[in-house]
Image (cartoon, rainbow, N blue to C red):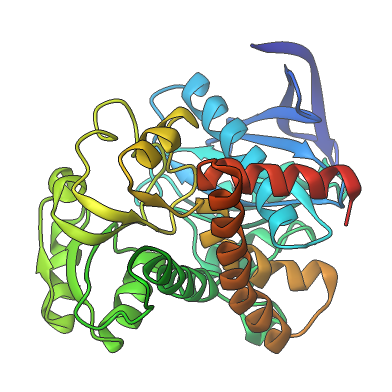
Length: 363
């Protein structure tokens, strides 16, 4: 249960910039809502854990139906970031920002700068990054107000677009899944459905096309799906039908929660391995997939490349090292599948165990 706490007004140069509302959620270090009516910004930041280091997580802009919906999403996402950082061996914790609004209509320079002011209130315990609804250009706008923002362009001294390494990690993960399920990792002629062909899904489609996959694409933006399909000689299906396509691999690359009570028993794929966060609406559905002998690749292992990319701005390693760390996620996934077999547990439970062990031991 989320409970409201005190309200703190934040001022700069004598002018009220926004209003912070402290919330409380069990098991989380901090949960704060921010409202700046002049900038038309309502946002929430959650810090799940800083046990391994400062929290790092993307800033997502989405037209949530209500503040409660936004809070529930930021809680799920920030916890996943804690596990993702641990599984990737990073000395970082988990946090997340969600912004209530339509990025195509509501995003303004004033809103982005106000978000930077909000991030400053955490005084370095939380670093933001790019996520759904934001671009590298937006990150540079936010950085006008805060130094606690990662993912600016390489020309500006940042790490660049994190979706490139996210897609690479998902691509390598799919190869591991094919090896686990079919005994060999070749992508050639494998049928792969990508749900969501935005920055990550679109780049993943290119990598899979180059490797000879038979692609089936879907997106809420049908025009975008059609354009990419024409370029990559792929098929398209309506977004609502993507989860019911007969295929070797289903790669969810849009929003989370796609594996739930109505979909878990209707999937017609052999493998679920994609770049979306929080693909399981509840851990129980990972068990359902295992019972159906559908191989599930834990999402926060598959998509950790993006975090690795922006983390180098905080931890200080090179671009080449970021690529190596992303490539190494394939070995982590293979080891998780081995643990899953030995212990007789679903892969997502094996991943959770490893992440929690690393959080406890801080290694």
